[in-house]
Image (tube, rainbow, N blue to C red):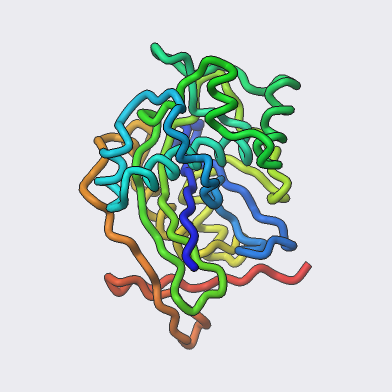
Length: 260
């Protein structure tokens, strides 16, 4: 069974240029243990609740971008917002008119974040209770990857990109990560090449796509494109070890986390 999932490339402008927020998954995780990744995870069925206040491209536009139906599109956008709040303490939401909530670090917010994690509260309920709207206009479709058939856990993952909201701070709050860091795509890729930051092929490839941009505005420029073609890599053994082979022939060397 393939599970729908959403992940978010959270971006900001730093002193050395464009930076992206990365988490290193704990080595006890059942999927991608020890790997560096972006905030994200599987869809919760309640992510498709239609009563959530919504600002930005409608579900139909996201369905066109992702090549799916409107229900799944709504679930994916809501999951992207929910997972970013759960794993980074960043909430892409604000008053229905305009703007983004400036601070979500208080004890009351933390209690609700924990309730989201425990699935005691849905994102629609959280937003409605605070009179907030989901800011779909802050997200951009970025990439679409599907786990290869030979993997025991399979995900149909949509990658979104978003600008870090002014006034908020990304926080190391994910119990699924043992490191959280803002870094440039180039630095992360250099650490990957040196074998010190293992990453799965989708993370390596999307960081490579980000690397040419000098700032977040350039990386986020543009509107939702036509349907993004899903990428499902194949694997082959090379003299340098296992490599993921993409449909366009690109080869990405696999770096395995060192034992604890």
